[in-house]
Length: 170
Image 1: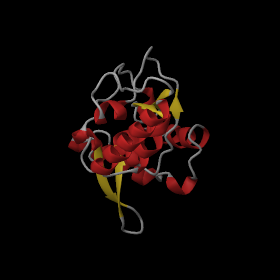
Image 2: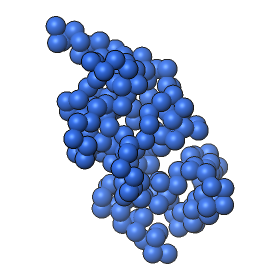
Image 3: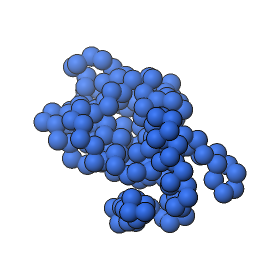
């Protein structure tokens, strides 16, 4: 019960989530139980209308921003997969993802790094860390990372952003 109260208050005060987007007590306890029993980071659940939706353990417990890991998650094609990737929560509409100051001295954008592995082209300026995903992203990549599900489309979009930056610097 205390964890559910904490879940509700954190969403209400910190993330300003609407009440209709939060899990009810039954859904909250069920998602935690499924996560504990299956050992998986996410489960599929049917809501009251019978439609499927994806719930991640981090979503249910609201502790992803309290992570003690010092390293950001690795961004690659497998982790970006919208159904089974470790970063599938990046597309979660139930959470608001906010940029926060990075604790790393010289953070580079993970998406720019993925698309163009050339060290001379990496983006180091205006790089923030997502409070939910814990991934370092530049301002231009923040929105596409959280809205474009297809890895192929995401990569092509970021590549066009990089080309625009290169043309602006000339």
